Length: 544
Image 1 (tube, rainbow, N blue to C red):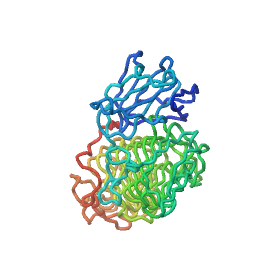
Image 2 (image 1 turned 120 degrees about the horizontal axis):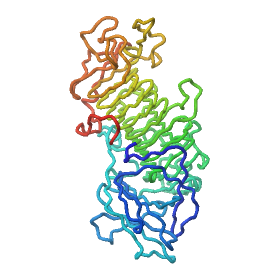
Image 3 (image 1 turned 90 degrees about the vertical axis):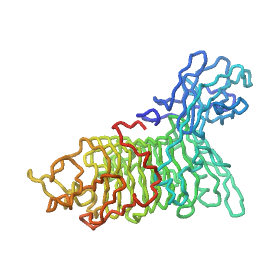
Image 4 (image 1 turned 135 degrees about the vertical axis):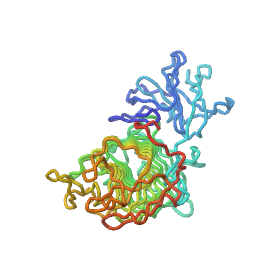
């Protein structure tokens, strides 16, 4: 996997925090292989072994220092004077078996340096301090529906400003396996501004549901936090719940991992009635049902830079790897799912349960669907923009469109994806070979429960290793052709409509075979939240 996106493989143990001046001798941490951003190597006598800048963050790793009983970490702009150094929270410094690490979060794009100062003899010893080389920090790619001007909040940055810095007055909570039950926060509980102290991460989130406290909340995960580490869960089906008081309530919450090895295990995250929530930079391992469930009436949600693995086996035959990875439903709108790595999941992402409308804008970009089976996404009643994703060895299908859905599929790379694009009850969805003869089988073949078909607009995709087109020759997908009529003709038995330019509209004469759905051309009239100049043809392996 690319260096810029951290990976988490297998079970991860929580890092030992270096709090204040004390250094714990406990070796309970495991560093996951991989680096982030630009790495600098240093001579052993300089203590720093590795450092780099990443997305709105920077880090330094170093070895032991003689007589040191602890460390403090500082950061400043590379061109600023030493008086500009700002000390990091103690929780951002961790001890691993063979090194220490400090991460600075909430940085604007730019150049920085970090300084590590040892505690020697009980005090900070500046004479023993060591300073990193220049660390180049990038900005996250804030694109897609969560950042569309047509959305309610215009952003999905949660507790952060769109420049990468924390919002003024934001509350920061550090959650580890040891603090998930004991972490505290003061939450406003009535219209008069009365605040009570709540203990435990789920209890704190539940208190936010009252709707009186709009204070931005940044929850920083360190190491692996398992189900039995939590104070409780408020969703028995999914796990940790973030819920607003009413539909699309402004929450201003970010859940983020610190460093390269943050993870949650044995549960997922459920969102209901949430506005402006961000999840970033952690892994979800062995979830209960869905890794991430964007369930009911959510707006401006941004799920990015996550590693997502499959969950508990369900009762249905298609739930061997769990029920879903990222599901979006219940009239949720203006959601961006980006830069995620979906590892061998079964049903990757559902868009819509049947109660939504095609006014819901959802964006998938720069995701790696890594040998996941299906639903990339499966769309029922939403308008979805799918660009710059890598479909890698998908055994069932890539994009699926049903009911009143519209899908604009552009500049993706499909490699060994069996059915790159499907529209329900037509084309490749109902084609089978029967006794060596291409046959339409609407009783047994359909993938989408015999639902009406949606319409897919396709542009500039690369497709390698797809199934053979049983009816018309060549490989899938089957593109619309008005001149090809008849039972097996591409005027009705098509998977997608291929355009020559991304701004070309799909004619209203092009309709789904079952249900008669036509394409809304939302992509030519809505603000999709992305500059087309930033959509590029992919060259196979993800390098973003």
